Length: 178
Image (cartoon, rainbow, N blue to C red):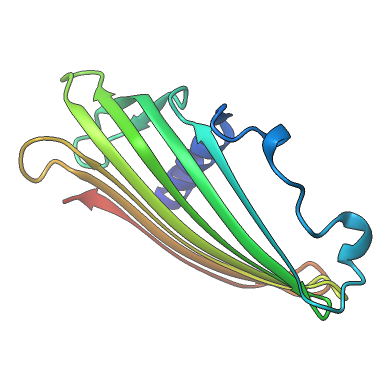
């Protein structure tokens, strides 16, 4: 149940984000790797992209400490992606964080300052389709006073074979008060 609720919160968090005007796609250079050369790349082809998402319309979150619903009132979610295609292998490292992340308790009116950081690695074979992914994420929502700060942490590692079957799935979800 904890895993399902946490996954739903994370999916809602990412699915309801809107792009900001901070770094519109029209102003970015295209990645060095395109769909035509991705599958046959045998020399190193690095790529890098950055994006920002406005999370002020994210909606409701829940304090893992008090159970109080929290309304997101502001925040910018930043995504920094680095990758390389080399010898028909794809490697990607992604770092994410939120800035100016503010929330307000709907019952108490308590104000929370949120912070979130995440790191993910993704490795795939461009020959047979197998891949592995590892992700760690930490979300901390702090408010004045002691022992009422909400903390959510999770670690996930998955391996998929060339037939598309999940062959390893390790996860560790934790949440509570700090």
